[in-house]
Amino acid sequence: MFGPGDVRFFDAVAALYDRTMPAASTTDLQAGLAFAHRPLERVLDVGGGTGRAARALRPRGLEPTVVDFSGGMLARARAVGHPAIRADAGRLPVRDDAVDAVVVADALHHFPSPEAAVAECTRALGPGGVLVLREFDPTTRRGRALVALEHLAGMDSRFFAPAELIELLADEGLRSYLVQPGFGYTVVGVKPTDGDG
Image 1 (cartoon, helix red, strand yellow):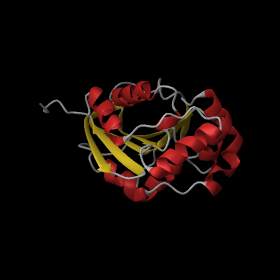
Image 2 (image 1 turned 90 degrees about the horizontal axis):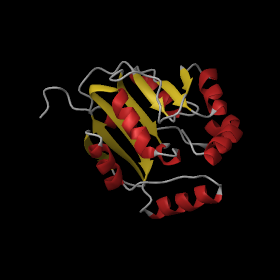
Image 3 (image 1 turned 45 degrees about the vertical axis):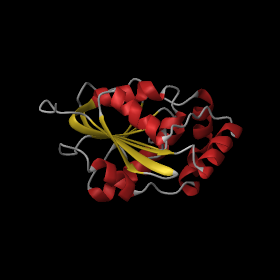
């Protein structure tokens, strides 16, 4: 799921991660999930680490399954009661059309192949389901600083501008939208239903 340097980093910092990272925004994630055209019961938090996004969605009555490749991060997610699966984002252990929503919060840039991960998330979504991507815009001043910092830390990060992610989702057949622009932005892809033209 993550590049080798990224997995080692997250395994090493797992115990401190939630103390140093800000909580995921319930409002930002909910803005993306609101695009779903089906009830949200089965939700995956892909690249979810310790369950930051999953925790943010609990107040909305959702209990996402955290999917991550870092054993250290997943141990923390399980310790606070999240269902968790160790898996690669490029090979999700779910059948086609099995979930209602997939959230990837602040993680896509760590995946060795973001394109393969988006294709897998799309495959797993049922018609009318949503893929919600929270990312950082590398074209902003803060984004350029983050890119430099992650590369200095030895990570294999690859960031996308919002327009690039919208195009990537559209290439997978999703109706794609930029929901919230800025340094931290949200892009949503909706899987068409049979009645969509």
